[in-house]
Image 1 (tube, helix red, strand yellow):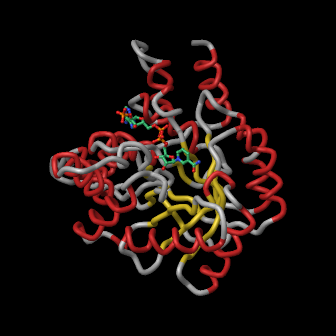
Image 2 (cartoon, protein in one colour):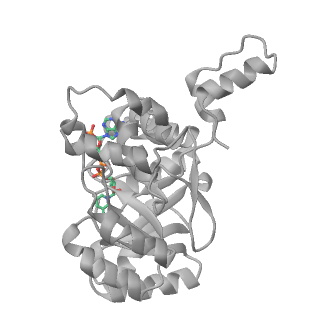
Length: 306
Ligand SMILES: NC(=O)c1ccc[n+]([C@@H]2O[C@H](COP(=O)([O-])OP(=O)(O)OC[C@H]3O[C@@H](n4cnc5c(N)ncnc54)[C@H](OP(=O)(O)O)[C@@H]3O)[C@@H](O)[C@H]2O)c1
């Protein structure tokens, strides 16, 4: 059961607790993040994870690495688990591997990466490289990136899953142009996960991909939940509507994320975050109430009307 800050405070006072008002940080740790189940196993994951594209790609100095260390430290402290990366994100896998080892937080995390090349040999080489860069014995999820050489790479992923090197496999896209082939692959293959782009102002996946994922019993990870920051630009200078408080939403980031994770087919979203303050903000979207269907329609009208 999820309790809002107000409910927790009320409960504390009703129970006769002496004036103990937990700080927002303490409270955040006390209230677990909302979880969703991976259909193929029933394992639960928090509905907000962390993406490592772009901001983790070109890290060379300790000054650049330090804020990412703080970001991952905060992410783990606030109950975050899912981290999404790719061998094509520059040095991102290496940075995640180093920081996770340094912080000793591997066991609590769910690490997802991708295979993104053509040919069986090249795929095998890239997968071995991901294990080395991430410094992990087992990777939780590997997905074929943007349908690159899907059949060949899925064949290898199946073997690696069988051998116990990975726990889940899937496919990703972030382009509507690929939705037709993506949907065909979802119909033809047994996949644990799909990853697709979906945002309050980019809702095509809701029509063409998410219902299929629900039918096929596939977990759904959402990429580009802010449209790479496009949504923040769209609302620049605008105040959050007063009715956002009806679903415990205090910031624009939470508004955009709560819209996504309130879709019943969505398992988790992986917003890109390279700042600790973003982590605190975005993980709050996995607490409290989520918008219902009527509220989701209101959010769509709001964004369409800008
Ligand atoms: N085909 C694929 O498989 C595929 C494709 C694309 C992405 N992905 C995955 O999806 C993840 C997310 O995509 P993305 O990072 O490109 O875009 P995104 O999540 O839509 O946007 C991330 C950007 O939003 C801003 N932001 C994040 N939290 C914020 C907050 N609380 N307040 C204000 N601004 C905030 C940051 O901008 P600033 O950094 O500029 O401050 C951040 O870089 C990627 O990291 C990657 O893991 C996968």
